[in-house]
Amino acid sequence: MSLKRSGRKALVPALILALAGCSSFGASGPSARSFKKVQDTAIEGEKIRVVELDGRTAGYLSRSSVDSFASVLGDVPQQDFRVGPGDSLSISIFEAPPALLFGPSAAVAAGAAARGGSIAPPSTTTSLPPVVIDQSGQITLPFVGTVQAAGQTLSQLQSTIRARLKGKANDPQVLVSQASNVSRTVTLLGETGANIRAPLSPHGERILDILASGDTLKQSVDKTTIQIARGDRVVAMPLSAVIANPAQNIRLQPGDVVTALFQPYSFTALGSVKQASEVQFEASGITLAQALARVGGLDAQKADVRGVFVFRFEAPAALGLDDAAVAQDLRDKRGRIPVIYKLDMSRPESLFLAQQFAVHDRDVIYVSQAPLLDLQNFSGIVSQFVFTFINIGDNLR
Image (cartoon, rainbow, N blue to C red):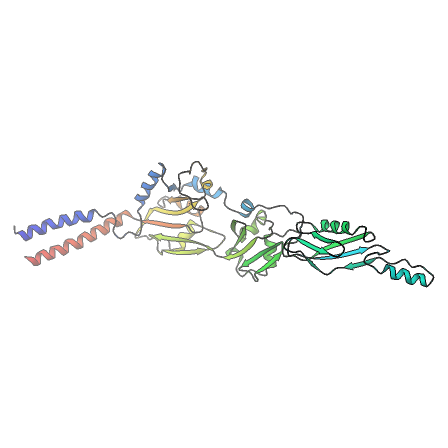
């Protein structure tokens, strides 16, 4: 045997062994086998949990509590209406006859005496120009002085001013009303007919009341999400859920920012699906079955039906875990832990589970590649190299 031929025969097995050492050929992501390793080590305190999606898990997730207006913000009972800095007040003062301070009592009495008679002077009403509460929360009135107005109800202000006028006016009566309200308002933004700052009345407006004051919504109800920012808390819910559940139509508080958003939710589909992409979905929500359908379903030529995964940051309570159980887990700013849900689509009941499992905003849906495809790719690559080197060897002879 010639040296060239023996070298050719030795090169082919060596090439096959080198290619066999490759773990994957052109895969678009991790295999289902690699997720099994993560699941095994998660018990020992690893940072990522892999949860098998079965009927019990899907049912528990569907019943678990999610952020809502009622649970996070609460429906605060209506409180007494109190004025604040920037509000404008209308003040009217009634003085019984004879009016000593605000009426023409003396002139009327003098004219009656000159004519040799007496006339009972009428009661008088004095309406003061609108008074604006300053930044320190105070107002200043003639014959009354400085009054701390901010934080008081209208009836309390009336009593305070009346007490200050006693001894100066004859049986004074005071009426205080609000001319303008800027301290108790909510801001309405987003997909509405008008972005406004809506005043809150003593009635205690709720979410739908404020939305109605902002003219017509630009988008349909099922595609609109309502977000409320109150202090450092931000909660969003589908408008359709607020309409369907009166408990979520909570009473708004001064300073709330209400934003109507159009289709703010999206998921990302990767791996062996017909169309890997980021897909927006409506505020009313979609299931995993609907999400897979929107990307064309699984790629029949490449997908591993046993390896459908959903990546999500999940609240520990949604999995029935307390803080002690996730003490070693990685957390995001909202205290959520990374979870991978696995669905085996080879089982017939998986279609029901996919219909029950809700997709959340920013979920990543990944479908792994079938193991047989790696073998096919490997065989194809080996065949190409083997025939190439055989041809080269034949030409060297």
